[in-house]
Length: 108
Image 1 (tube, rainbow, N blue to C red):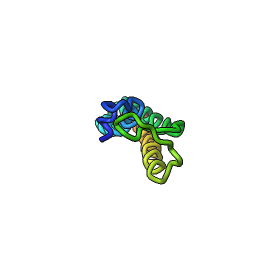
Image 2 (cartoon, one colour; image 1 turned 120 degrees about the vertical axis):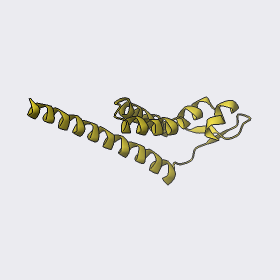
Image 3 (tube, rainbow, N blue to C red; image 1 turned 30 degrees about the vertical axis):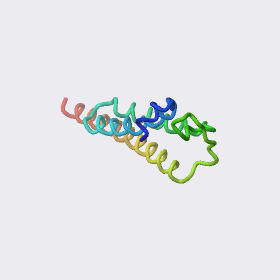
């Protein structure tokens, strides 16, 4: 239901929810060898981590807000998986670019 929260007035909640589909898109772009995948992955991770600064969240379609008392294991699993995969994408990208430059140097 995260994609429809914007219809109930939860624009900021919707933006945080967008971290999920944009992260999936980043993985697809990265697999295809596009550098934008790495940038989108890092952006998605930053959006997910921005949730740390929130005190309240939309609780109902009528605009009622609820206080966030604590962030539990699910949130930390979500953000850490994004962060770890972003870091791995970065290392893989630079390792691949370094390997390509070494191969080109050997061929010349």
